[in-house]
Length: 376
Ligand SMILES: Nc1ncnc2c1ncn2[C@@H]1O[C@H](COP(=O)(O)OP(=O)(O)OP(=O)(O)O)[C@@H](O)[C@H]1O
Ligand SMILES: [Mg+2]
Image 1 (cartoon, rainbow, N blue to C red):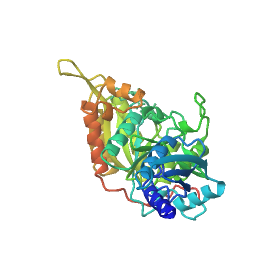
Image 2 (image 1 turned 180 degrees about the vertical axis):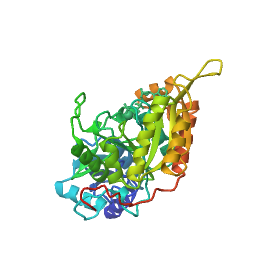
Image 3 (image 1 turned 120 degrees about the vertical axis):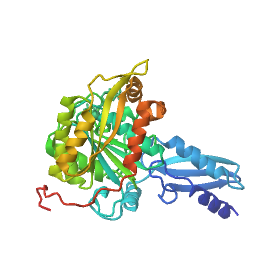
Image 4 (image 1 turned 90 degrees about the vertical axis):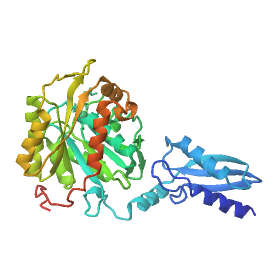
């Protein structure tokens, strides 16, 4: 009788997903024990790591699932931690038995669309655009990840209110999630307030780890928030993710537009697609409804036209995002404007850009760049 009840509880627990890995806890080897005393069930759960931040969620879900079983009146959840061996098994289960972690998005069979958000000048709104596009896509039901590839000037964790570190399972990292978006940033690995002083090869290695050592699951879209300019990271992205496509962010200003073109033109050298241009800070709406063009006008269209000429394929202006103090406040507060003020004009434009990117076909995969020193 009690065996039957134990089986029924185990079956019910198969409906509980690990909040990070999104698979049944029974498949992941997390259910250590089910002990019954009359109608009281004591359930032992092994966590991937002792400080698992998602304990509360698990307690709630496990309790609810077990309590719903006929014959169970009360439930206790007791936590333990996986042994090194269990963690290694879990890693193999998720990753497959292969030794070296590979970048899933660089595999020819990958279905993930990869967009790198680039600009020439700093401070034009790349990170704000990245964060908003990601949460807008997630709100539309897509599985989305962000790699904050701005190693020196990371800002994505703040913009999405992520304070948690990735969970380590053996040599694999489970990224934290915010608003349905998986996020990895160097900001999660350096002590607060400490500058990152790394040189090119280390940047490349860090980016490679973000892509290969992190368990991303099946993503529909991966966004990379690039640092400003045309530096090492942009080249690394092109090498590590040959199918990635660029979204260029600029302001309407002529000077910014010129620099943005340069950033876009590296795509010609790296043979990446430029999918479009986002003009940000386009105007400030006045109380009388007129538009104050603080940074001039026409920069976004100009970059789109010139990049179309340069690349020989149509590079559209995907949207013009107005200046809006609410966008900045939302970013500072870790709650992006497409969620906090979904009806604001800025949010509407960003949502439109997100949808047009999501609707694109995936970039051509696996094109060799001929840039790799290993001469692949
Ligand atoms: N449309 C907008 N309206 C109001 N404020 C904005 C807008 N876009 C961006 N900002 C603000 O401008 C600042 C710079 O934006 P953001 O950090 O997104 O730019 P960036 O291009 O990523 O900068 P960096 O080159 O330093 O990485 C932020 O404080 C952001 O909140
Ligand atoms: Mg930034």
